[in-house]
Image (cartoon, rainbow, N blue to C red; front, side, top):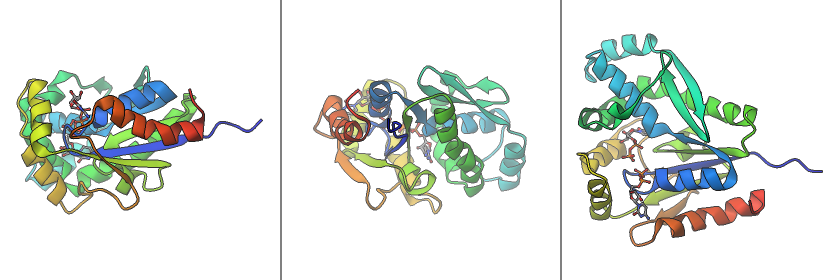
Length: 223
Ligand code: CDP
Ligand code: CDP
């Protein structure tokens, strides 16, 4: 009997384009390990702020990174990053983290510190007998897994994305984060060549998920 393939699904896009909602649904439907890499950058940022490290002070950033020990905790179908044995909580969605995360994420040393860690999660998914990995972020299909089996890029009108984020409550200047994320030199937010681009502005989440699920089901079989 042929063994079931192990698949890697990369989902990238700007803030509130629908990455988390769609990747969580795909993870449930196809039994894939779900990885929200934005939460990693947020957790590193929260730790930097806790240590009072300024993103402009590269020496301090490097020294803090050298002291950070990363590990993984799998909860259900979700992989959470531990820093020093601790998984960050709601503080990673705070106003302070929203305001600083794109500045820390633009630092090449910060991205390098997370590169091997993120790639290593494919091994965690295999060990735990998932049928694959669905990883969402900004550079998954371009840098982390450029050879992923499926690469999607979600986008939506800025006004619609701002409306979505505002309706969730909290304060988040997503236009400014998108500007910083798209203009940085290292791993900028952009639709990678060959990725399937989906405009989510006027479609429901269910329709977005269906579009992604069709090719996955063709590879894995209908769950
Ligand atoms: O949920 P939302 O799309 O608003 O943001 P997020 O996915 O939690 O990501 C927070 C920030 O982390 C982004 O604005 C980027 O600055 C950074 N990030 C990144 O640089 N690369 C990734 N692969 C994921 C997130
Ligand atoms: O992860 P990301 O920041 O890209 O977006 P999300 O957290 O999945 O989606 C942000 C909000 O937009 C959620 O409340 C979704 O339910 C909503 N959404 C929507 O209304 N229609 C879509 N086509 C996609 C997302």
